Length: 277
Image 1: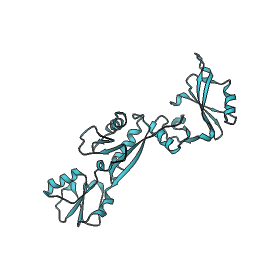
Image 2: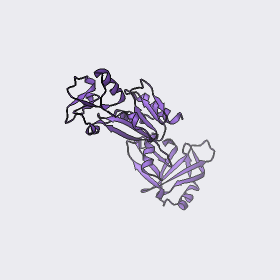
Image 3: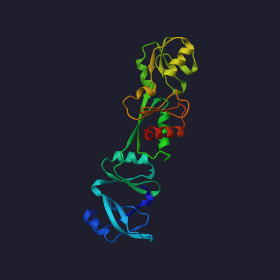
Image 4: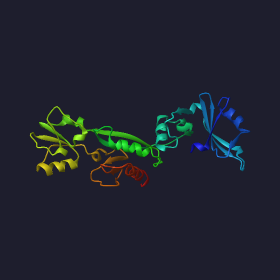
């Protein structure tokens, strides 16, 4: 629903079915109103209404359905909430299971939500740097209102630093210096193409392994942190993939975007993952 379709009224009666039935007998509503939020102190009830055909600004309510009474209605007030953003509303519904939630958000706009069924999206990405780039891009994409789906994001970070204890060689190599990774043992960064003075284990993706072979003409002990290899059995996922040059690729329940993905590319990828089934 849109906030323009919701009428909010303070009343001085207990919000029981019997009292609401009496209240509605002579109720008139604004021509745009399709829903009513009744408020008595900290108690809320929600209704869906029907009105007589009329060209007047206010019409008599000809029928109504009580959608929730106070015991089934929670209230959330936060001026940062965009009450028209479906992913945001889905997250609120998820935090208030089996409840109708009246929400007062940005610009004091009011809506209520009921029975939203969330769509879960797992964002799998490497860190550091933190926060993960893809996690930030997905958050920004869902905030644009260009994805009108009740998507709830779950983030899974593959921490390359936590892989370092698995290394059994004298030294370790990380993919790039910008990560800021370090180690108590000698360490190198692949993007610097350094001269190696130790036997190393490479922590990286499959492209990193290929680059290492090209640079040093030998194989290397390898700890795989490729996000695409961490998606099995995790439902709908989005990952970055060095094999994708632009746009996105759908692979079952996984959508892959370029390593240098943009917000428009992420928006298109998420929409394709959920809508092009």
